[in-house]
Image (cartoon, rainbow, N blue to C red; front, side, top):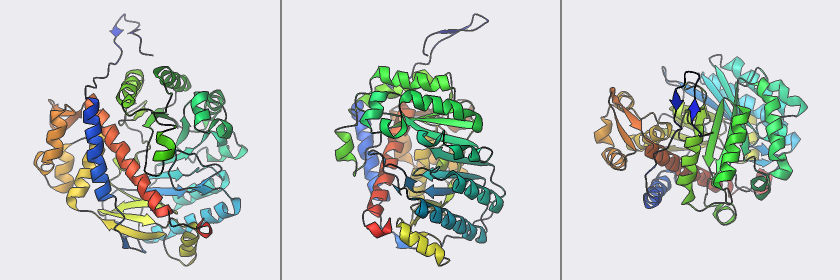
Length: 445
């Protein structure tokens, strides 16, 4: 894929060559800095809460819905999920729609909806009914994004989602059978070729198909990564996402020694990904690539400063406050049955904390803008976040846009840093989920 291309007009297009010069010691230092801030800001020093705030006029919001069920639980996944039982799942979908009714009563409308899990497609009929209900309640929803695993792509009920889901993200992780066997996925979801065939058949159902890949597995050589990228390219999806393997506190012992590649491999593997995909796709974020620049993708927090989550274990960020829904399935159901929302905790953040968070997202998305910080926070980015801006400039992660003084260009070094920072942020969020799940008893599941 990275060979020289000659067009019909004999113009030679050179392959993309990622300019990542950040040394490994600097990546390790940034990782430690991020771990400090993540531990500081994602501590569970929360206050109790039982209601979401009303919407603020003029703000844009996104609706997130969480489906916490899977037929099997992957060893490296730390999202909030339970083993699927049909009676519990059907009752849960009913509660989810009731919670949406409560959100509507508060006065919310949404431009976008994202459905995550777990495995969102465990009951396609209930999922379709829930999306239809959301679109009726919130007529401003223009796009619906959803996740699935390869197991459900050829199920009889999957076609019920056609016309309801605009973007289907499929967790492939790898097309290599050795990697699939190592991660216990080949028995669950089939071989890489079987997954390839299922995705090819499902492409016609949705305007956007996204193929999720993971790099950073032990034994995932350059040849294996290139095979994954080549197979993804043959599918010609609208989007490809290349996540780094996330190592969290609760998976460190089981994953780091058995599944994770050495930390020093990350920059080399990421350089290979950039070289292979740039030119075929536009880069939407540090790890997401799309055919066009204006389509939504998994990291919905980039496009929406504020979002509201429904369902057990979902998070919301509204008015500089993080809200957490109950992680106990039993208590969540009891709350909804009693006419209460699923939220149980809240944590307020300072203006500086929120600015640092948006700086992280700006680095990750390649959309770092002085104008955004001026209009949103009323500050000069260069002085309000002096340490962050200076450090990124020194290592060549950002530079001024010569055509627009308000815009900052995120370089390949910056993309590498953005990927690393976001990986640590998500690992921190996974640690929070683990802490919230730890007290759960069998009766809560």
